[in-house]
Image (tube, rainbow, N blue to C red; front, side, top):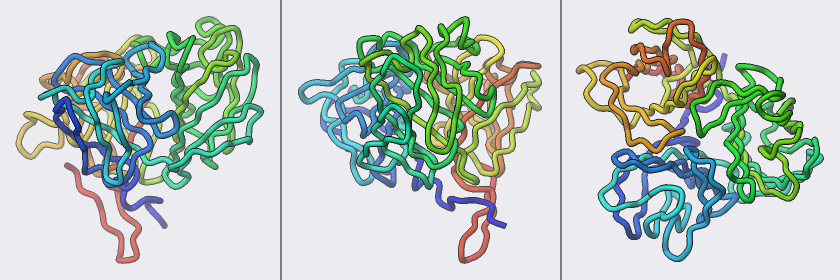
Length: 368
């Protein structure tokens, strides 16, 4: 039995830490040429930035803002996606800093399919960069103002889709759809705020993603502008679940330092968590940022809020998460991740599969 479909997760997802210098700054160590980079300042208050190869190096959107897409001019912003990372050519001046002098940053990178291609699987033609091995695609489309379907290129059904209007109605919220948690009812979450699940009918004016397949997702346009307003460009990031590499699910908190254990089938490198039954911050933990946990412990104690401009937070134990060889366990009692009876969704990517499936024999993972 194969325990994983991907033996080397860092061929498809990786986290790098770097310090800005306000001039040309080549960030290496990613291990591949990324198609999506999500950057957040650790040491300074600043909005996040998402840059992808489909929209181009100078185009930024922020997960902590409803602002329209920002296009960097002159020497500012990203200058290139490189074979082992990416290069900044100056200081970003729009949505948030990416390379300010002496400021520390984290960059989360995903490998897509490289050069985007036209996709006509749906009633709305999309432009797609898809990696079917790792279950990740970047999808761009122009709104039609009507119900329709959009091709995503994954070849498998998405588990999570994050979308944003890019211009004109760019002040609309990010909308997140997470199939493993609430199915195809079209309800969603906003990546840029703390709100609980939005109801498609009462909160989103009927707009939502209401069906998913191995080739398309279905948009019910309603009367809102979040997903498919006439002539407005949109961007979407789509993920499907890949055994031993990625997991998208939900859990219930218990309010205890001996918290809920969530099985993923791998040792996580990245965790995104959001409470859904009431308001709460989005939280990101990763395996490259850690601080003062007890010697020999598996805990990660530093977190970032992708919905806020806050610098990195050391919670002092309220949001400890224990990284294990086959999943993660909550060790803090903070309401944003482990309130008693609270419901949460998560997105996780692997550092190592629980057991590899190599020609040289299976190798089990260990905890941190």
